[in-house]
Length: 564
Image (cartoon, rainbow, N blue to C red; front, side, top):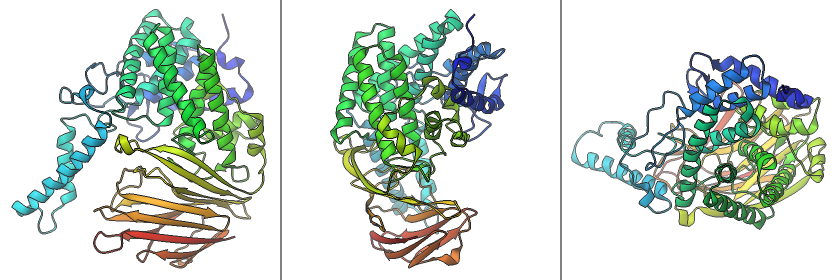
């Protein structure tokens, strides 16, 4: 009998597996045979996290683990949508108690690319007209009635009839769970019963077919991490099922991705992003281990090395973080909502365990341990020691996934100053509506080693920064001592444009309109913008500039002079 895979791993790989599994064991519910979500609400049971847990069980193989993994995988497969004519065919419910998406009202296969964009824009206009008509015809919205609530009710009515992407279903769960099934099939087929292998293969036929139809229709565009997973699963299962059409599709998609990657010196549409780079590196590891053809292996190898070189260019070994600007990011800290610290631990070895602290991506760690790393030699020194102060610029062609497909690619420039104890980022050219695009960023460290960050973001009044808002654009530039940004606001909504500053010992009296005296950093501020409001929280502050349509100018400009 062969020994468990974890016993054949390096000390670093074993550490990742055991640490992650201890965490996931706590969230596993044996009665339900699923993992409670540690990403948002522990009362929910998630399918993707459960699939990663099952893979971890197969890697660890302690007493009862294999049997448990089999139960979990069967349960995850129970939540796949089998609806060939629907846009969500082959994907999975994200949570155990998700309602089934609406059926029978959306002939998406007969629509043109960008249908999701046009529907969303149409419903926005219908909603606005609906509220306008109510205002004209009756008193419902007079005397302070809540028009926003009416819009929400209208949107809910539309969503109950037509399946709204990322509300009633997540198309990306096809790719995430299919990747787990491919690894489980490749590595552990001899441990799994025939019935489970049969069910996984049948589910993967649905998942890959749905993924291919999505890609060909371009109804819902794929961001880079999903595009990589799409190519991998189509390639892997195309060969497993001897589907020549899938094999050809995967080959064409891979060549196209490589051509785009090379166009601007090795960059993705999803550029400089700790969260999604972690997924990218994991999928490139799947190609490295499981690609069937030499050409697919060669393409993945070139992209993997190019990605590591980009990460190195924007990395600061003293701050142990990637500099902005970020095309998409949840957090400014590399060890939050990201697996990059896990990859760096595998590279740097003993003594860097602290880079692997638990976060919402930690369920992927056993998979990452299994896949390993392949870092080009020239990039390694950048992760060991600061390689000198530098001003870097990289161009990339972004994807605005909710924009008109005829105008959803824009050439952007990401610029960054990487200094010994401070780094700053600035984005220009982006027209992305996604709040995850961070156009202005600063990271720094005090003499005492305390770390801080600053970012410029926006939100609808009363809303959240992590949302899609149209008509708001940023044009920023950086030098070693300054950050300048123009903000254009072509929207009918009230918007808060604000600088978020995070770190210990912040004081409101130090945040004056013309100067921010921060621990270890002083910013002089020239602002062509409304008078700011300062809000203080436990470990961060917000400096807010409010845009009111028809009252304030629809343009703001900020010039930040940086002094340490």
